[in-house]
Image (cartoon, rainbow, N blue to C red; front, side, top):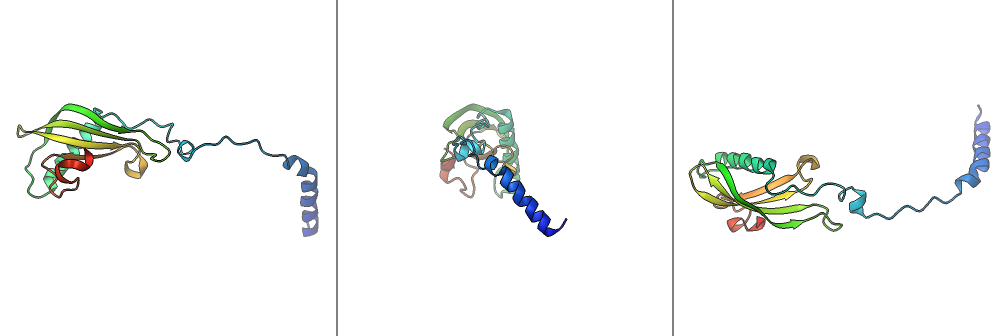
Length: 153
């Protein structure tokens, strides 16, 4: 087919279909950025007493005491008095659900220490799963969470 015939075919098709294509599209319902991203459809951050969250804290604490110099070689044996003290659901301004939790950890040396942790929904590796930040009182050697775990309280 020649170029001239191709152009004429396109013009003819546009002329015939023009009125049908000129119809206005139905209005699209207005949605917020949070809704369109699906944040409000997803479940909120897991609860403080979720076994997977507490297991992750135990595992990461064990890694911490092995790899940070001058920390005693202890592990978390059990959690007591697990509680939530703040909860922020996902909103338009802050699309990440957060739970601030606290507990008392019984350590392998028999001592008890306060544990403060934060669960951020959907903030795991590559936004898959939840992120957990934690601080065991007396074990924040480099003051990552400020004195006495203040950042996570």
